[in-house]
Image 1 (cartoon, one colour):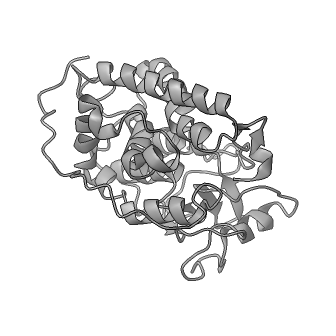
Image 2 (cartoon, helix red, strand yellow; image 1 turned 90 degrees about the vertical axis):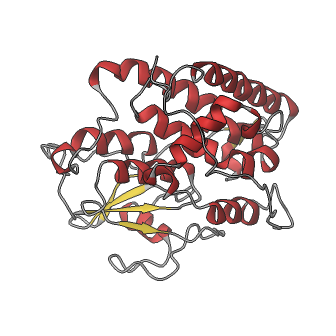
Length: 306
């Protein structure tokens, strides 16, 4: 977080700098092609996590190679454990500045690099997953689900807007608030939405019934980080995820799927937040807990209504 991202005690996320789209027809200069692009992610970052989930669900692992940065970030930004073998970069910032030498701000993940033009195409995290879902269809693996069905898009978008503003970004609004009123507003909105989601999930397995959608992909990364980080580190401590029976069972249900559980790295998550964000945790000490079982039976197999 930079000082420019706090205004009158409120956290205001910086805008995304690179917003080009990769399309099936290549009309904008970036055609959807296997092996052409490189996805940069952090296992710690919830925005990057959603792109990893979609990449796995759609069978795009061989189509879109991925590079993972180290969870510990310093003033130079995200770094690679070893220089990236394709670009040669030691820090993600090198790719940002190669694409725009005047760039100022945080160097964020996820982002996609084009190996042909040798520049970043996008770091527009809200649209990366839907782009993979709608523009890469010819490259999807056999049996890939339709995560963004056209008939449901207005409803999915509406729910996603609520979840982004009050949950995904809401925990950051609470955690980075520097005055009481903005913190209180974010805290109250977060748990009001949790109550709505708890009720919604009482009689349906996923947010839109018996099918996975983009909405589930967007909610899960925040749930995965909630008890381990956001509850204490971001002071979102009214209730744990484990205290919300439907949401907690729903989160475990998703975790049991390889695309979700296989991309969830609690070690990276905890070390990133507690070590990197010294303005909130000055000591850098990483807590050992919580002791919770993500593999416990969830019992949601029969819920298909909604």
